[in-house]
Length: 565
Ligand code: ARG
Image 1 (cartoon, rainbow, N blue to C red):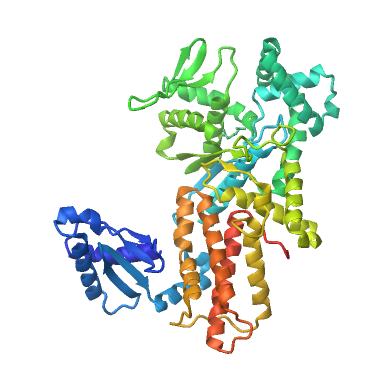
Image 2 (image 1 turned 180 degrees about the horizontal axis):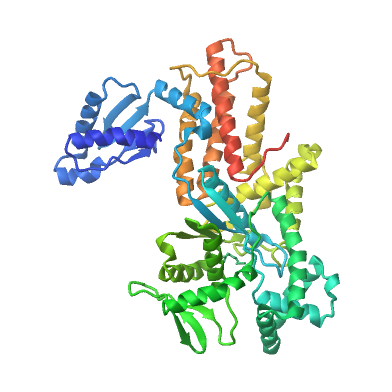
């Protein structure tokens, strides 16, 4: 990585000068002045009892002496009041770009391979998928793809919510309305669940009955098990259809119910370590620590009526995953509001010794809001179901881009995906964002269609050209050309940051900036009638590399490219 490369060189200089200073390089925040910078002289001034500028001058003069025979930089300079600015040489830039182009995965250094289970999606079988389920699927799929890109062995588990109170409510409703098992459809489930959920809020007795049904189902009641199997199948088909549309794929289709056979084993382990205590008839695991600023309540393991809860099935699932896969890492992607649950869960894992060999991560996300700043709703006031959201998105795109009405259905579906996913993924996952279909469907601005349009436009130029693309050793022709090349060199840094922070937004924003550079380059530098052969070959090379980056990075965001638009 270029940053690390410069840091290594600089560190040697700092050590030679006996400066107790870490060589931390950052990408320049004023691109017109340099490519990378070092700001460490300021903090060191007090210790060294010199001015920052004096220190920066000393460092630069030593740097230039040590590396006088190298050609990596066209300029390394000390700048008042004490910055050190680095500008890469054309030769260095072009060499690195060639490595990116010809070596696998842009010549990015990959970490040690790990086995990772990623738990995302997490839909509930009692109700159809709605907007609230979008982020877990989209963010999760992207993080999974980024982890795979970095060479890890990644297993995706959908972890269906299938054994909680909601399923008891649906079974109660189906029985109450006399719906025969063979007549259960997704439309019926769609109706029953909200009705029953409202009824439970009003009627304490119904609520209790639903809880009993849930408990009896968990205990193996044959009649309820039959209902359960049908509901899971009907709902599962619908869930699968939506995920297929979104190009989101899971290796495991386990649910909470699949954790039940493992619960006794977990209980045994907890008992061996004396971790279960009783509180008001319920079994709990204490997880608070003296250093906690806010008290962390215990994880409730078993209710006084014997029923198991969300935390219990999560522990059972962890037990099962360890037994089956021996993972190094388990990642969960859910709404931020579940943070406390995962904190409790991971602390129990710590007490059980699991964290000695496994790293657990909860990656939370914020809410998708409407323009009123409240959770996104349809005009009727409910969270829109995903299939109707897809239709609406298609219409919004065609309305704002009427020339595209001859696109194939397949390409339009790709566009819908691009619009929705890019709208989501450009936001830091931890933040809420406002879902504005019309804005997201535009071909200008920070949108999915803009990225796709840029790619297709460059691709159509490249298709017409028959010259080979070859980068020259030293030439870079103008500002737009250089800006694009430097942006391409930023890929490694960006991708690694996106990987280590688990933030697809870093990648999405890079992709947008890259497209801005690609378009600026193209506006300035017309290649079709260019006489200068060397220049033309270089520019073809840069555009080819740019499009290759766009294509591979779009795939990491799970966005496909249409044939035309
Ligand atoms: N079904 C849960 C929900 O709807 C998400 C499941 C997340 N995964 C987990 N292992 N707890 O919020």
